[in-house]
Length: 348
Picture (tube, rainbow, N blue to C red):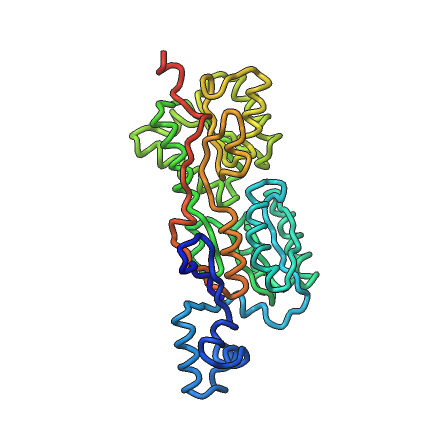
């Protein structure tokens, strides 16, 4: 099915699927299915008429959707890093908005960036006979994924844009997003920056570190002189607070960049407890632009990711819908708010 922008100029999308193709071609939905799956059973005249409707409407059936046929559990497995993170909750809402219309439900699990947990969850989803899977991989090891790639249900992955080259993948550009965040801090004059990041085996954590390094090097600076990375096992509020207390005890950093907004919230809470003023004493940048980011005091500077749209796009791909959207809609954008400012050393 294809999600097309409405002709009325609004922001909504008009979904085009097999029914719409059938109506445009003047045939039954079964005939459309035959054209897609068993073209030898359809006359050339009918096939050309259906193909013309497909081309006109922009309908693109996906490989992943084809793998879904024959299953009857009416459940789609969705595996994300943390359902408690508002960013992933928004992605789930996007997925739900599409699959509910097809009479499907979600079976949701969190990996918490644990590879063993991820393998266990995927095995459980397979044994429960889910009709398809949308997942956020925390490892790209072929050995780890081999048994799951042989499963009979379809898989659509949400992963960094740099890895999302296949049709059954959706992603944002984490390198660019992190680069934008670091460029913002460098432009303000910060030269002692801590980066609270997750494990490097997690693709988006590795990519965000790469983006940070590129921004520093583009200024002719050495990352080792400007940046200190603090790696945490899971990007949570609690881990953010622990990392922030360590940063504040060392007393060298003028800014902290966090790999997500939830960790940034932990930093802000730690600063509040220590009576450290943001941004006068310490600038803080998050990543994701979740719902609470503008409501914090000070409001959080962060990198916006279109979480809901990413969920919609993933679900559309799984169900055989081509999500017609400009690449810029899924591109990360810096949102500068009140949690960042010029370091005290420059102001004085």
